[in-house]
Every structure is written in C-alpha cells, then in structure tokens.
Length: 368
Length: 173
Ligand code: HEM
Ligand code: FES
Image (cartoon, rainbow over all chains, first blue to last red; front, side, top):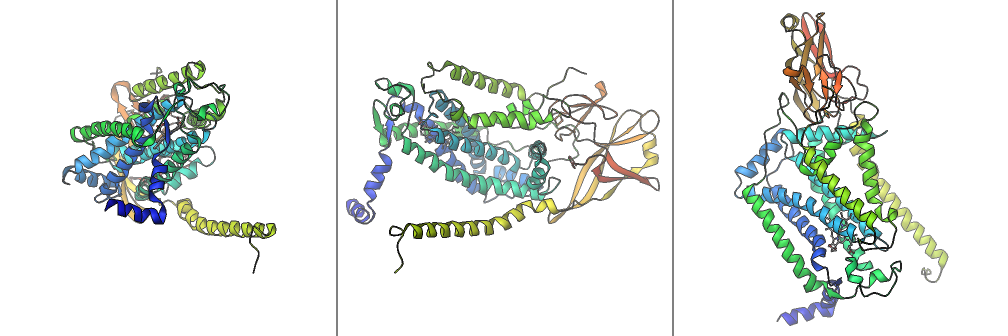
C-alpha cells in the first residue's frame, strides 16, 4: 500500500529522488556533535513560532492591558504558564546557542572563502533574533518593558542625523504610547519572524552549495595546500545528513528542549509589576543578554561623548563582526595555526562575560 | 510569430528591460504608501496641554534644597486614544526662594531618578548618573542638566505643560 502511494508520487514528481537528494547531504564525519548547533537553532526557532502563535490566542498589544493579558495567560489559562515559560526560556536558550554556534564557526575558520556568505547571512539572523528578544521583553507590558522601550528608543535617537526621526518613527510619536506598543507587536510577530523564515533557508542553501566545512581536523589527510580553495571542499570522510547527522541533531535538540521544558515548568516566566509611571524607587533592568551593552552605556560621560556608547562603539563592533570574512582573509583553518584570531576570539568572549557580569550593577562614579 | 530571446539578442534585451520596469513600477507603487504609513508620525504635531500642579502658597513652605515630588496628570491625544499621562514634577526651592520644576527623567537615556537624602543627590538607577539638587550633573554619563518643565503661575496656581524648557530635540517627556 505505502509502496503504491510512493509510486503514485514518484511517477508524477519524482518524490523519492527529491527526498534522497535533500537527505543525502554529505557532512564531515569526525566532528558531528560540533555541527549540531545550527540544527538546534532551527529547531528552537520552530518552537518559538509554534508557542508564539498560540500565545496570540490570548495576548493584546495595548499598553497597560498587555501586562494583564500576559498575567492571565500565566495564571488563568490552563497550562498557559508552561506555554509562556517555553517561549521565554527557548528564547534565552536560542540567544545562548547563537553565541555557541558562532564561536564554533569562528574558531574553525568556517567563514573563510568560499563560505563568506554563510557568515553574512548568519549575522543577519543573529541581529534579527536579538531584536526579537528585545521586542519580546517590551511586549510583556510591565515596568521593565516600559523603561526598556524608553531607554532603547532614546539610544536610537543618538544616531547621527536620522536619530530624532528614528525615535519618532519607532514610537509612533514623540512619546511612548499605544502606537509604540502596536509597532513593537507588528515587528515582533510579523516582520522579524518572516525575515528569519526567509533567511534560514538561504543559510542552508548556501551551505549546500559550498559544502559543509566543519573543523580543521576533517582535512588531516588532505595533500592540498591550505590556500587551495578545493582543499576545504573535500573532507577526508563524510556521512549522509540523514540519518547519521540528523540523529545527533535530534539527541541534542531533545536534551536542550528537556532543559527548556524543566525551566519553563519550574521557573516559568516572571511577569513583574504593572507599569507605575509615578514610582519613585523603581530600578529598570535589562535582560541578561543585553547587560554587556548596558554596561557600555555607563562609560563615556558628557555631551560630546555620549555618541560613543550609544552609536559608535556598538556600530563599529558590529560592523567588524559582520565583515569578519573580509577582514580575516588568511587561509589557515586550525585554531592553533592562527593564534591571533584564536586569542582575540577568546578575549572577546571573556570581555562579553565580564561586561555581562558587572552590567547588572549600577556604576557609582568616583566623583561623589 | 515574434522571435524568441534565443533567436534574437535584441528581443532578449527588450524583454529584460520590460521585466525590470514592471518590477520597479510595482515595487515603487507599493513602497510609497508603506513609507507614508511608517513615516506618518513625523508629520503629526504633539498634543501640548497645561495641567494644574498646585497652589503657590502650598509650595511656599516646602523645605529649601529638598525636592518634593508632586504628580501631574496630562490628558493628551495619542494616536487614536486620549490618555492620561501621570508624570512626576520634582519641585525644588533654593535658598533665595526661587522655584525649580524638574522632571524626574534622567537626561542620559530617560530612566526614573531616585532622590538619595543621605547624599543630597538625584541618582539614576540605570547607568549611575548623578545630579545635585539644583539639577546640575555631578557624575555619570548624563550630557546635560535636569529637564525643567515648561510652567507658569496663574491666579496663584502653578500650571505645568507636557514639554521641557530648552529641549530642541524633544527628548524625554
Ligand atoms: C537562527 C540562526 C541560525 C540557524 C538556524 C543556523 C543554522 C545552521 C546550520 C543548520 C548549519 C549547518 C550545521 C552546523 O554547522 O551547525 C549552519 C552552519 C553555519 N552557520 Fe549557521 N545558523 C544560524 C545562525 C548563524 C550565525 C549567527 C552565524 C555567524 C554569524 C552563522 C554562520 C554559519 C556558518 C559560517 C556555517 C557554516 C559552517 C561550516 O561550513 O562548517 N550561523 N548554520
Ligand atoms: S539613564 Fe540615567 S544614567 Fe543612563
């Protein structure tokens, strides 16, 4: 019976061949576990879309009500706390594994010719996912949401020339209002997810075109010189994506999902108090992945310098990361053969961790 | 029968130009209303209103150099709604008896300031901005002194506008 159905499709559209073509991608053999993070991210993103769609059954993007709608989902909708918890913890997990995936790619030099485009598309995905996180934080409609909207739109207003306009356009006026929330909602729920949904297939298509590079240890037996582009297209040994690599991807996805699920059930999502505009003692806090940036804002005092922390340093840092494949053009892939890149990468990660750790504390300047 | 692109290179060029033009026309036709919609807030005037803060006589006996936080409520049109925006006015009387009406928004990026009596300073919980009681920056990243609400006194009543003095870029509020 199944065979008959299969034949029916094959006669018309050659389905089996199509599936085999899709599943048969050759993946370098030795480092399989290190290559699971990309698929993990794709998996987590589908979790976000699925849970997000069903949160919309109850959510309202209207400023004071948004927080109550979220509260209702958590406390009055049957199992709503788990749905909301998964959406929150999978978002955190996704941002964390973005950094893991990027580090894996960075330290194995997989962004080098011919794979520059994968990195660029990856950076687009990275930026969009971080903004998804920030806008999600704003949509809760609690006190932190309100201040995050204000602070971040004020940061945007320090962009040279267009800054003032940018702030008005994002807020839908000079002040944070119902329109601001509606804009953020449209961006979080439609605009950015569509960008991700478009860019993940582009990312994967590019990887299929150039072949998956993996780490330097896949090329031990190659006789070709490092600067030969063909060397990095032919690993010593490969396995088919399905089931060999997919099997590992599934195991990692399940493990991470289990952790997300437990965090969702045990900790859930904190909703926090309603926005009280007159509160005299409220200290706004950013989400953990934004604390490094937050820390940056504490430096560069005074009128002329504010633009360093709000615009120049983040923009230049981001631009360097974006253009990495065109800056680091050496041919070496092994982290031991390119010590400068490896050391810089480790220092950057340490700096990120350090800024994140101290970023939560308000900085008391010495001039009291 | 017209020639196919494979038979005539000029026909190919012609068809490519037509395809390109059609895409451009459709793209621009869609982009214009979208841009208009997104940029619409730039062409809207902010709703500026006056709101009562209190009687001058009541303010006269506040302690000098100690801020008193008094809420004002601005009833303004925002988008398709009419909302009440509660905001804090930090009223400070200096030793000569002159009044200042500060906003509690930090001039760095807008967080809500806390008054710390032990240090006689306004401190910002976000990035450590500090202001003295007369609004001058004494530490941290804020680029300018505290915002002062536009205000006037009429028949012994203090009125506050939802607008800051000396704030050409309309930051804050
Ligand atoms: C939603 C986000 C992302 C998804 C779903 C995703 C997905 C994937 C997948 C499935 C792979 C192949 C398996 C693997 O090596 O893990 C991959 C490889 C790759 N990714 Fe991503 N990725 C994402 C974000 C990024 C980011 C942020 C970057 C870098 C800025 C990036 C750069 C790369 C590169 C250069 C490769 C090729 C690695 C090689 O050939 O060895 N990706 N990605
Ligand atoms: S918002 Fe007050 S110091 Fe940054």
